Length: 331
Image 1 (spheres, one colour):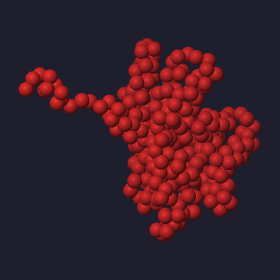
Image 2 (cartoon, rainbow, N blue to C red; image 1 turned 180 degrees about the horizontal axis):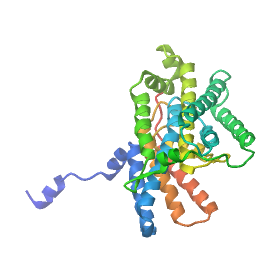
Image 3 (spheres, rainbow, N blue to C red; image 1 turned 60 degrees about the horizontal axis):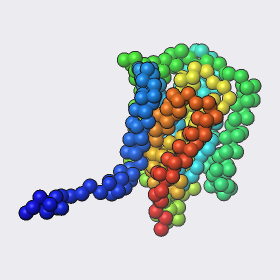
Image 4 (tube, helix red, strand yellow; image 1 turned 30 degrees about the horizontal axis):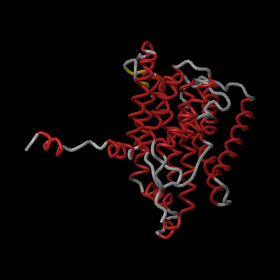
């Protein structure tokens, strides 16, 4: 056998096939792109690579991942929630206003903010399910109402300060690198994973997102499940707002309004589809990391805010085109 014949029998690497397999895992792609953008950020500004940079990256990723959890559940169930940013901001205001630089009020704040988030979520779900209004219109309208109420409460001024111990529980750095918010994530993340992957409710959410009629025929209370996804989303956004108050120390009107859009993109980039029935929280965490690294890169470039917004929008459109191609099963 000649060398030519032997070479002809060697397996050839099909890069197109490898790429197709790789892109079937949106989380893997998000992590790979995050690593690439992170390396690019370091190349552009090597002096900025320090413990503070790493710690801030982890903190903001965790905060975005927590704020995106409810949106993940709603989207998998076939809905859409644009009120997350307003709920986060309201919860942050309630937190700093109630604590007013005092510690020992965390449980009071937690109950109050979760109740507020549940009410907002119930209103979203009620108008979507019972009245039949489009989810986008309903959640944007409710978001606007929540934002107006923030002005009523604060008159547009910063509202108090979070308790020092609570602030420390969010931003303290272990080994001068790892922010203490990871302790909240260590409890929160497993709960969300269990809720979606192990609980009966999670299985029902996937069924409803795939095909409401089929879910109904199998005995699922479709309307109840949809409303519950919005209630849970509101509560999770409120919890993210509480932690956000610890991160910012104080709060003002619409301080986290951008999270309504950023969390949605993180969820979509992580592999959850608009059509419902498809998605994982692990993918959302990967999407949150990618969005945070991208934001840091644009900041490092030192571009004007307007140019950063334009580039951010263009990149997000490209990401959505790349990842959101799969469809949920409908038949």
